[in-house]
Length: 190
Image (cartoon, rainbow, N blue to C red; front, side, top):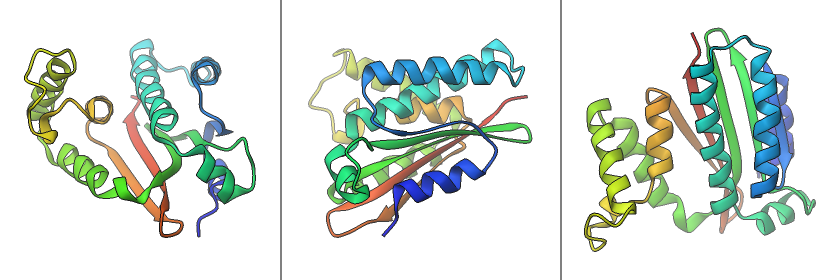
């Protein structure tokens, strides 16, 4: 069984620019992002790079807020205020955005398929998929389209585009019903 708190402490030993473990709700995400932005400024990054990183971070944190299982995380850690982990770490010419949260095992097949498809796509095809997904979400395409084209996964596609598809995920089984999902997005900063 993986302990999210131990995992977080392990990640923090890396070249952390910013790290957090706890609840993930809208107002807290806003505070985290503002604080993270200040920390990125110390690295002397260009505005366009910070903007790209900011976009990926917001999407990753919102995914925890929308899809995480706070009650499962609380049972797992014995702490009521743990919903997910978030860390930015710096390594040479790259910044890594890492998040983690508990997920229900029933979503693993669909989630894995989505990631495999997005990572395997050529960038031009990924851009087309992104635009089509936006049109579906806006209601401009038949909502009865197959699930693979239903408008879901726009955040994953966006993160893949902004990271040149340097996106990985890890699923660590906790028990028969939940797993700990880790998302890592590697972004070139020079």
